[in-house]
Length: 216
Length: 222
Image (cartoon, rainbow over all chains, first blue to last red):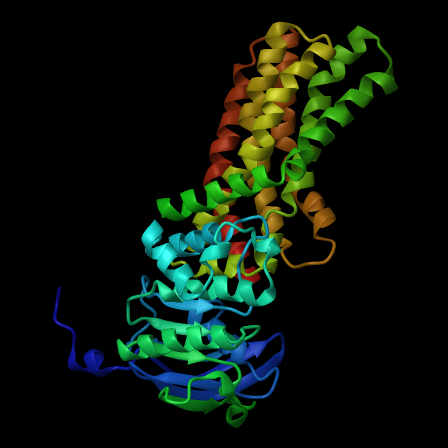
């Protein structure tokens, strides 16, 4: 073990240099550069089809950039780097129960999946009464809550990449998510997020990144 | 790595138990298809005995293909595949776990059912035992190759038929050695050579097919 160099200590958890992304033959954005520091939330803006989701997928490790690179803590993506990615699809199975779905998602990401952690996460989202209900009996908003419930178990200041997390959530669901985002930023985590700005808590520290400025 | 394998494998079994009609579809197809042949060909015992091994192998092959084409489709559509791919443990574990679960749900019931149908075709006990043994060695090959086809055609329209077209030619060696072993026993010869080749084929497929599936899955989620 050698001591980390000063550069890597101060390097932001995520930064992009000259990043370009293509879908098929269409270039979505190019020359994108940004830094996401610890304890900071970066809100992605841009018109439909500008590549907000594609950028989140690049960060999550699903796909590769057409040009440029993403740096994690100032270096290449470490093998064990955990990016907590919640896509616009909920990754739930119709025939699994709420608690089984959450336990599965936590287990594949090596999160805590003991009964206490599951109960606490479900309680945060008000899902305890439905914990044994099958996913197919839930509404869209409730499904979204189940998909986001794993954020309530997270205790590490990791990087969160959330794609339209406020979709289908009601007012109390939005508050639940804002609480988690606030706590995460507080402990030095960083968040990359898309969606309606109106849903974000007013006091939450955030910067905006407009992908329209980098339109190819 | 073991945790992801176990979580995925157990999830597949649990979901299959919740939808037993879907899980039983391939074995139902096998039963109906095999039972139709004596009715169509006629009750001549010698003829039935001759065609039985090949017939049951082909029906097992088709039953496997029926279920394998959707192996990754549901996970791809609902976003589960994305989560599995970024879990940091890679596509290889996903491909291996899904293939293993598919074999337990489809291949294993076929291995159990085929000897029962051996009686219907008037096979000798030694031939029935050999048929079960070759299917035990052969059905994992079918699940593994099917998984490659399913991963390659992920997200394509008409994927079901395409999988069959891609995978069936690859299964020809397994079919030849599997039926050859039973025919050898029927003819009073040693089936050791056929079984060894089938075993070698199984080892080769276990070592290579998950790699190919994993590569195809990585392409599919990009």
